[in-house]
Image (spheres, rainbow, N blue to C red):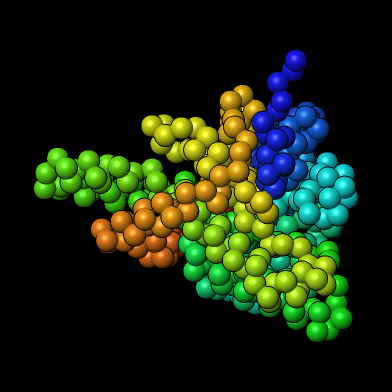
Length: 385
């Protein structure tokens, strides 16, 4: 008897698996089509780091760079043209999923440039432009859920765009974008505009929380008064990411049970699902499927890097976990708070750092594109490694 694919089993628990990867090779080799067909992958996210790595490490973009370089001499415009081609191709491969699920899944996500992160009106304008440029109903525009990003998110969803809200870490940050989604749907209903085609995900980053909190705990461990105190601090390592995510999930479920959402849902609105992002384990001391296995619950998306997908197929366990041991999660966060590690403050720092990291990654991607352009045009510069 053949073994059931545990990755496909996740759908029985309300989980949609999206792949956190994109490359011309993934699209053209048939690998993404295979992942959709055999492993139940039903969406795709991308980011500048992934794109830069794909461009720098293969020759699959050479023809496209030669073809597009004359039309887009500026490296940022060339980067966008290449990324849009990839996202269109991914969206086309996922279109069957989109149609079969009536727009619940089958999305490919693309980001706005980071220089827009402090400019809400321009972020909104560029989201509308990029959505039109891709020209696929199953594209999601990624906008960070920062203080400046939320107004752009609200305006874009009012216009009927599908939005992947990124860089969320805490309950407070989640609440702001959940309220924006509800407000956007109400706005459209009041104007007799359709809401059935609108989809959004609120992307909660997980492993970055553990990386940050573990570093803070390590400092306290180094200064621990005695062995008992040291063991207590050690026991908290690797627990913050899952605990924080479970508390966000608890808040999400309370939204779904609220009267405001129930009224909107009756008009055909889709749930703004939680998307677990940054689910690849950073610390090799932790189980490789820590975040994939501990956050399984209804109305969620898990966007996994390729190695996590493969690991789940190989030895993952599909079982409902996102709403289990929630009181223990609260206790963990209370213990951290008593140590001066407040999760909302942690989230503020992680969100600001996330914007900076995104800007760095974007700059790196632009440099790689320019180097590839010069190489393809024989201008004497190798692709940056």
